[in-house]
Length: 252
Length: 338
Image (cartoon, rainbow over the protein chains, first blue to last red):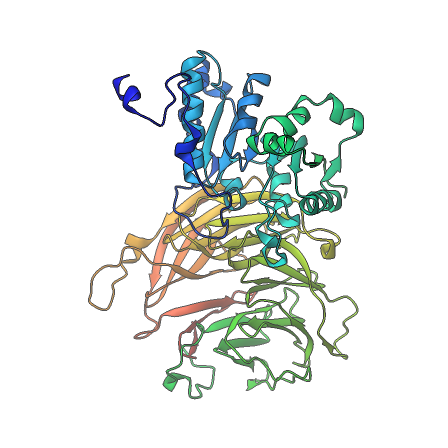
């Protein structure tokens, strides 16, 4: 406790980490080889460290829960925090490349767990390059939802291969998503919105959700409102462009 | 042991060249060797060197050749490398029947089992497919277009292999990954359905081969890598069945006589119809023969073959489907058989 009082990065009133101590660049190069541990395979990830309460209470080996939601490029974790209470029984993980931002989200989750006993036990975060290491974290068909909210637009054509939604990377996302699983994308950059939509539209293993399905989906409502980035766009009264698609079995 | 290739002046060349490569015709009609930008084919039936005919305008290869391979039915031969040209040769006439320009340097090539598609991987981790339909061997196609098939995210692909039944294309990369992808009916539209990832290597994966017999026609995948292991996989679920850590077994010694504990696997060759994998290891004078029990899906004994002569460190291995001879090649253009 004493330590906490002396720690200026934690807000005294809320117990939450203060964002200004976790400033980071808005962009990160996914092609540079950063050094962080990468699990050899999904079975090498010790999820009991991420979700201690879920793993201590379930106990039996057969009933081990698996992560079902992935927020790729989770930023400061706004979406995860909202999803956590909306789907309290679903394990979800944020993936973020910038280490300071990952650190912030980790502290934020720990603080929320302390101040709200019993809640936020189903969220966690890892620092990784999801464009390279998605298959190291998830098994085939493990995920039911994947989120790509306000990704880096990488405007220059020569940098398009750095975009987190691309025809080839969609193959990997289709692999980790179960049939019927949903991929959510949103951006405030029209050009990127068109790009993500056309990538998904042209992929044989994804189909668009209908208008009715979009309206019925509680996660869709969070796309604009839950993230820090989305709130910023709303404040500036900017437009957003979303594409929400379902993983389907490929036709033979 | 017998030298079958004219040695030319390769020994004296100080330039840095790509490791020598060897590929053997499936029915042992011929054997091809690449050293640097030099490609030579020896006709084993006629016991003479083959004259390659290249009328595509580009005179042979201009830079290091990184990949050579015969198609499974023996009708085609493909060569490619740092000059970004993929050349498809007819093994009847030894004419270059198609030449494809790659955007990037090429690191691996493969021919689909039906001989209708040539796939190649570039330095950016993209695998491209070239449609050979309607290529009868008499005409020459220059600048044939390739379509992207699949990609590993910005990781160099080191090996490209079709499964024995032709259903899957397997790719290995420098990020420890092996990916098994369904080879689609219309490959030009891309291969989107990933069957599995084979994860377990802790360093880059350098080579792949399938081990299959009459009893196990689907076969098992064998991989070698920079972590000095050879691994056995069931590709359908992507399960690691067994790992052979040969580092200590081989007793590899460096030039000072110290035992080298970690050595990269440079090439693998499964002996068709048998349960034996021949393994070439960096700095090992000789090869390892690893046997495999296919019923229990485990590796068995490892045998070191080291009577290949002084400083003979194989860089590439080849074997025909009749499995009579194992061909090996070392850094200089010297081939041998036993």
